[in-house]
Image (cartoon, rainbow, N blue to C red):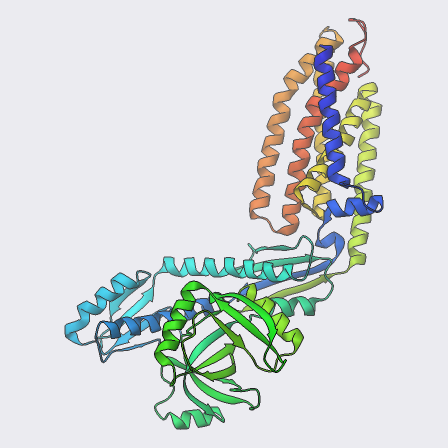
Length: 530
């Protein structure tokens, strides 16, 4: 018995020391500084920026169908099916492609190409004999999900470049294709928006016409209008020219996701520019394109839907290149960072921007901590008055419960929010509830004539099932809040779950050890102060 009690005391002491280390870590500086390094405060306590963004997933769908139009044209050419026109002529349906002018004798061949190479589309025949390709509903949903996930990851990488500690970047369940961004400690919303919203969508397109002075001049030079597979974009062909208009192939030869690396550098004259490297697949495609058009073709480097440079293709290029265009050193550094982190697959709009001042966060901390301290003192006083000596047992267990909870948060890097403080206070209440269940059961056993030691043993044995049952059901509720809730609600769920787990440990093991230690050296018929 003595050995078992000693081992349990050693185990509890070890848990206590480990919890304290989780709270303060290796002491550096003052006590408050040590705690602040391990217990991370949320936006509502520390102050910072709260953003709700919406990803324009329709752009990703349009870009995908643009690429498939170019692929389909190549496939039909390789199959020697001539006279066809592949286009997107319905602006209200970005997920559809039209194939017109298919010879009646080659319809089955075209459908075979569609079936083999474009499984994400359903095909149907129009009354005029053309073929209509519509992206499948499942493919659209998958593309939307992938676009949202890629946007979250790209924004996360860009936010990391700001050096923000413990940011929250996740899907926002209250809207469609929305992202929640919370940046504790950040105070400059303009800087944050500039980093996030800079799509840095770098593409290389084939130039099919221009430069023209204006859009009107471009339309005059092309009386049949802009071909369905082409677009007009403004920009500068070289650093010395003003605004011009170019006609480009709609589908890009290289897109933002094809870039493997980008670095700020300088050209031979010492002017800032950017060097880039392509992925293996993109490099192979770019090599074929430049090799087929060397000496005659032109390509445009397009950044954020604006032409930055137009160059003649002098030779085959495989996997590296250089971007010039009158950058400052800071612009070149910023752009290379954005390209390394990947282009956003679609643009974003800001639905909500809110800044929480650090003074408001400090007031929330003071009020929340004060509420927790007052609540805990009132509860401890009640336990001492109502349960007398056993109340000391309960109060020690409550304090250890709080230490274990904060240690959990320190090790898991969980973020403490104002609702999280509410979870801490609720945990204190649950801890008291567990002790009340145990103490009342012990009182019943004493009234039935059992000795103190037997009453304690039976009290814990009978209360154990009830305690576990109530805690498990509450933990399940907290898990549902964590899965479906937003940032502050998740903070409440995390602290409540950790606190309940700690409460099971303290209410069942710690309280039992204190009782056993108290009764170890007492007479069999000794009374228990409860």
